[in-house]
Length: 105
Image 1 (cartoon, rainbow, N blue to C red):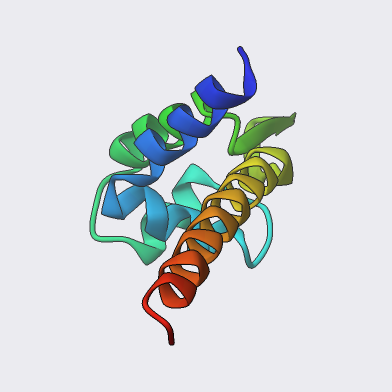
Image 2 (spheres, one colour):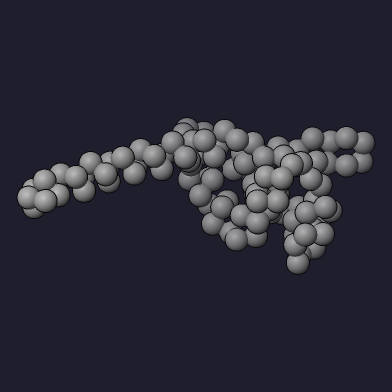
């Protein structure tokens, strides 16, 4: 998967508000699907589906410890998106500056 595909996958995964809440919860540290379900108004099975989508986008990784599976955030894809947003922002800044100069401001 190339960088643009990874960025698209992240935006697609984070387009769902429940997945964004899962990411916020995981930002506090690794958790199981059961622990996440305790903080959200949906079932453990629904959490598992959201975690699967986040995993496919590369945003989380799973680690089995006995019967538990703990999920943690994976920073790489978010760094790719932050870099992309920085690039887009810089291009817009240059365009707006050129427009300001053109308008004599």
